[in-house]
Length: 577
Image (cartoon, rainbow, N blue to C red; front, side):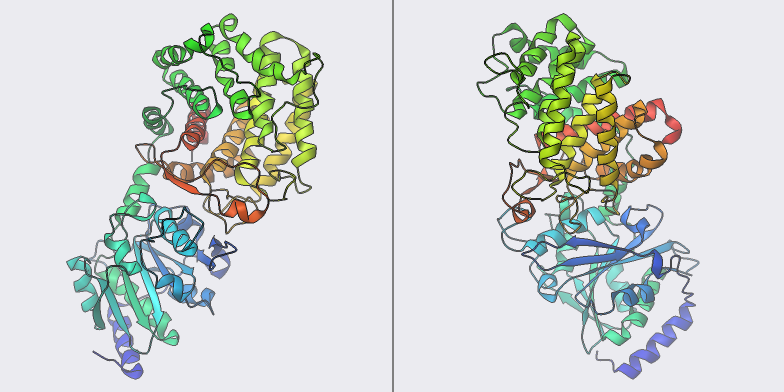
């Protein structure tokens, strides 16, 4: 059925009158949050506009997301169709608040085949924008997506798999209804087995109408759908709610089942998961995991297997932190020699101290890879020289990599502020300070460094609570490990009084729900940057693979921050929000 513009206006007037729509925005234009999904240099940009509650996954409201190529007046688009009370007294959605957001990109991106069929990693190769868009629709988890396209005829496109209830509701809106192909974005969201970010499906439709009619058409359509008890909560949103309503201890137990069950080689990735398992035992007042961890390290303690390779890299050195944890918790005499062995790499063949721990490779990672093991050696042996060398090591790396704005470039090769290249220094200093008495001069000097770094990082936290693959590039992907490491450092700082709660607790309260939503019950994670050495330019960091699924490194960082959060809440339960 073709409807002329005058007829459509008349029809909408009737719809608005009959449904008694009262447009009562709950935020004004100034409270809408602009955010970026993709600004990859080789891709089509994708930007967004929504309320902070939408981005935080507010559970009280149904959430509708428009996706469009029309970016000429995006503020007006959202403002005119945004948030209203559906005055449908008999519907399930009656008087529920509908929150509306928008994503803006090009027609080429919207009209591509979905899910993205590219075999190249996220987020590089081809179809980069499509990858960003598809995965973001998982962690945004709206209850409905409406793909809006401009066209002379007002009509609605439905996936073939659309529910009978949605199909009936759209037909009752008196516009032409047509079927979409299976590869269409709305169709793939509704029914694809490969769901966005492996979160869940999202019901979706396509709306075609002229730009000047969009505000009225969209507004009337949303009110009509609300009257018909649509949107209902989507599978994606339901999954996100389930994930976020887990307690930190519940998440820790789920991660415990997935990570920390081997130490085939001494390196930080499995070692941090073993430490997190010890933390979990402490929280549960159990000892079974302590026994399991001791069994896993027994061959190293006995000397049957070496812990250090010749010219060991930083990952191996920092892997020795598991022995410092066991020395503190179980038996100092049994494990301290392995900590000292790793720390003693700071001495050259002549026995004199080197200016920095070897194998630093000029990367900011080395703040973590070398600093904490030196501090642990000082704590366990009582030898002051290890504290002094720890301070020397950290200052060496800061001079090499710390930028004037307070965040770290990954290496002198380029000024790019890689996410994990900032997570490592934050985590590293938090662990160093945990090993040094607060009255010690080294503690005071390094504490100031941690405070300054975290203050600089808070400024770059995303509205969703995450930090990015490139700290100061909000259109790079939201990266899991860096967010976990920086949040851990803030939590450890609050627990020990190194940081002020008024300054850092809001960042933690924003980050933890985002972290929890990116951890599945079986330990799969969303957007973990793959292992990364120093890169020659910023583009190379944009192109690093973002892992979706289980990952030993990501699992370790998630496990650490979740147990630290559980400890914080256990000590200060009134602070949970």
